[in-house]
Image 1 (tube, rainbow, N blue to C red):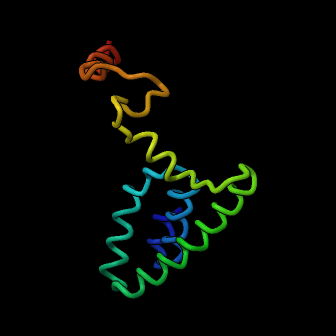
Image 2: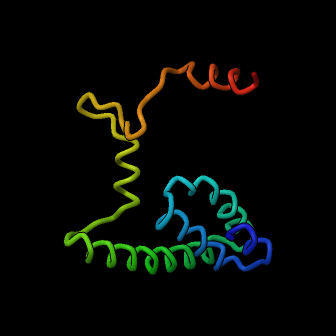
Length: 116
């Protein structure tokens, strides 16, 4: 959606849809939106990008924190929890192991097995 809105020169809505995807959906898709953000920054300038980015961030994040905190009964910010869970390497922890961990060559072996 963000790419389509960006192609239609609807930059503010492109920022909003990428913000929704990153904050409500999956925080790591910010990497996908970085290209759109950079292009908007170059075409529209820093003031426009900051103004619309901060406005949408506050609107989306405010609603997200409000709803989640209401239902969880405490202050909750899910995108931060997801990022911290997947990146923690303190106290001997190996980070997010929800789906297990594999040795470095697992994916190479799996790739060759898929071609048989």
